[in-house]
Length: 176
Image (tube, rainbow, N blue to C red):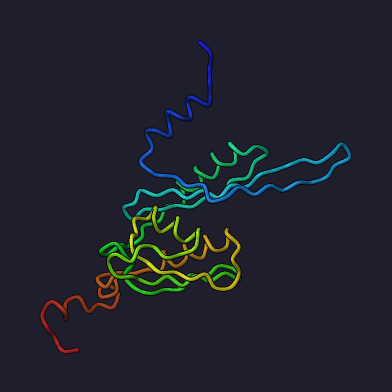
């Protein structure tokens, strides 16, 4: 019996609870005396369409290895996104470097109106109705980090009331 790593990877992929989407592969090269050497970077998004989403960037000398590294990094960097009725709870601006992304909730039936990167992340997080606008730099890596920054800072109304300590006043109908 021969050992085939590619088939072992496929078995692992079928048992995974997350969907994956590879956003892009970047190729860089460095010229040496004998010629050029190429390296690759892959940006991968993982999500369960139920509020959990992760992002990873893997770098390697071969594309499949870079993708596997990115997937393992994405599994480690999972975040929970609060989803209410298929949309986000409130408007927010995520920032990273010179990229900013405006994320706005939308009514039922609107769909995800966004660029490639925010759309992919939102769909894998389980968001079905949302508006977004990329502001500043449109670099895919920076935009992805900006979307994650926005999603990390989202709070539901219940979470905000708990942070402010007004949960008891709301329940008893106290003065505001």
